[in-house]
Length: 189
Image 1 (cartoon, rainbow, N blue to C red):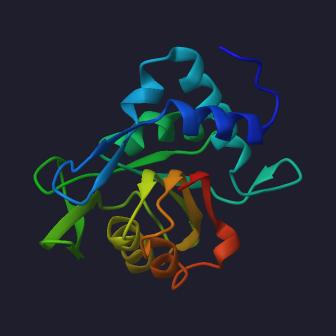
Image 2 (image 1 turned 90 degrees about the vertical axis):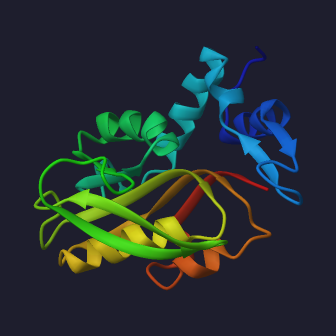
């Protein structure tokens, strides 16, 4: 693996290494596969390191106290981010996957409605929650998480992604919740 010493070097390498699967899961979609990163441990370490560099900070203080991550690809690097910031990680999952009382948010996907859930009581008024996922596309899932955070009386600290598919409207959707400068992605496609 070549020597990587800057975030720009990392971005170039990732763009070269991430596999794209045309017409998957359906015709017209070019699927960017995070498996390409996970298969090469050195690449996963670099990705984690530079995702941490994107975390909202002022001097040495993180500007969030909790991080919400999505099942399942958001968990992969979200846990590294939570550990680096010494912040609790909150799991956002599909219905029926979390025990106890849950908060549910329905959202529109390309083909119908979907739902995500978070265990009740984990997000409290006054919390500043960062939302992390592997990919920003239409923004539906991340916006649903933002709505859960707002329902709990907490603040959205920002959004953090490995990849932003900039030709889709996700970033614009999330600007309803935070300033564009608080939507970070390691890679822009």
